[in-house]
Image (cartoon, rainbow, N blue to C red; front, side, top):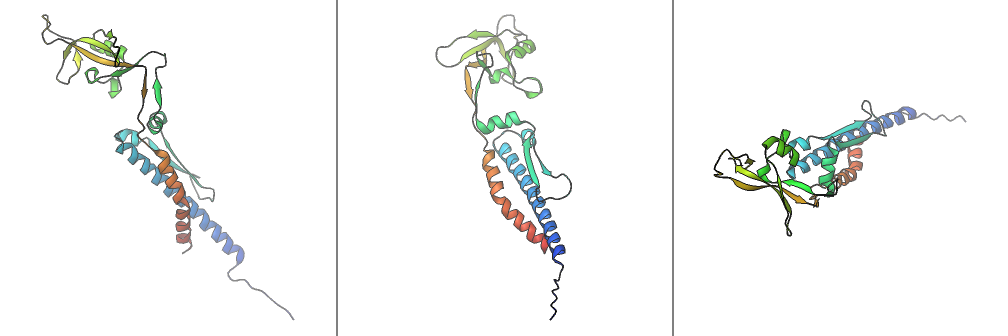
Length: 209
């Protein structure tokens, strides 16, 4: 008696096709998860009022950059990690020199390119001297003698009689500041991770249909 076993379709070819489908599914799922997490983080940043520019610093990349793999991965990061990380953790900020942190008031205006202005820069740009005012209760101050322009910013007075001249608080001086936690990036990352198996299965089924 002679027995013969034929496997149709070819088992090796079927397994190879299944591996290929798996590579496509995993890569597609990682690409989708990375893009989704980038979008979620950007929404958090803009929702916290931190601006579109900072939100656009969130980027993502799928690996491998070309082709497909069962070991595919997605990386989501920020090109401004210090700023984003600070709003994500809410750290306690102290002066590097162990003195005061100078917090500009509305009368100080903004620095170059909209950045927060420093006392030294303010004196150079306004041509006025800052004067230290110690207060036992509440933050101490750096004040200047001048006038307030239409934007509410302190500038040099043009009056020789001292008309409209005021003593304006320019900076608040505090030993430390607790930055408010405005982001929860880990929450969205965990959600993305939890949904990853479902994405792989959905893409695998789609690839084999």
